[in-house]
Image (tube, rainbow, N blue to C red; front, top):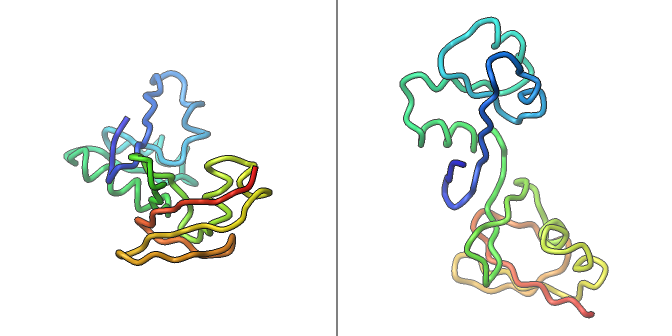
Length: 134
């Protein structure tokens, strides 16, 4: 596991004789440049780790994902959502019933509070609280 700005990123080490795991990966991390593997995974983001710090590797991977971190008021770990996420996406991520039972949400952004609906766009670092009926 690698942690980048509160987000946990998972790395899986593939055995050198079986690269099938990498077919489902978002990013392929190679320890050294390998032309054969770079050709094999040409449709994936490839990061060459050689002479890079772990933080630089994590930063490169993070930029590729196009995600934002959105927090709940009581959570320490963020939800990782796409950059164009709305409240509805956060509600689904918390629990599927939050969308169908949605009443309203509160978003804290840059020290300001907003009372919003399902279509409200989220931004990096927002803190969300959702009111849903049972």
